[in-house]
Amino acid sequence: MNPQPAIVCASSSSVYSKKVSEIDRTDNPSSLYAATKKAGEAIAHTYNHIHGLSITGLRFFTVYGPWGRPDMAYFFFTSDILKGKQISVFEGLNGFTVSRDFTYIDDIVKGCLGALDTATKSTGSGGVKARRNCGFIILGIPHRCQLLVNILRKLLKVKAVSPMPACLLMLILV
Image 1 (spheres, rainbow, N blue to C red):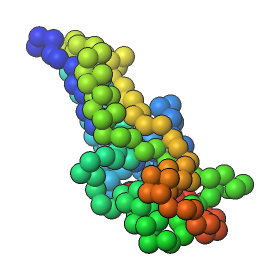
Image 2 (cartoon, helix red, strand yellow; image 1 turned 90 degrees about the vertical axis):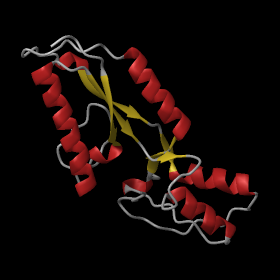
Image 3 (cartoon, rainbow, N blue to C red; image 1 turned 90 degrees about the horizontal axis):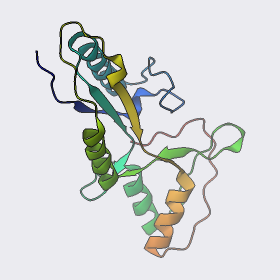
Image 4 (tube, one colour; image 1 turned 135 degrees about the vertical axis):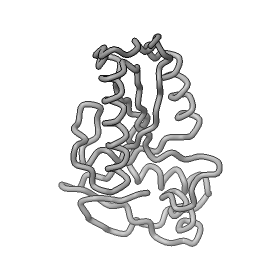
């Protein structure tokens, strides 16, 4: 087989069970969705190993923007702020404020195009082991959830309501 173009595929931050960095392990998925994303990554590695396909996976983190999903946290926060409700910002151990990556859709598109522009071409098949041409990249930057709430309050021109005390080990945002 002749060399083929590079492949860029989508994955998700859900592959991480706790810590999040490109070197952290992703072998303990905590949901069925995470397991399917991890399975897709394993298939990509296998195709890379067997067929020499150059594959770059992009792990998306809480993508938002126009036409966003209405079940995302920022919609709930916005609705509650406009209704004058208190926003619970959960804390982890030792009072650390929980962070979450919120990635604007335009930045995801730029990341996808950048990955396509810089990807190494595939080497072809014949048992060529090209593992160096297969990797996964995080597209997201963590921000404290309280920062998001503060930005929303400012943009909505609503005075802050004291946050409701809430101390949990994990905040689950879809």
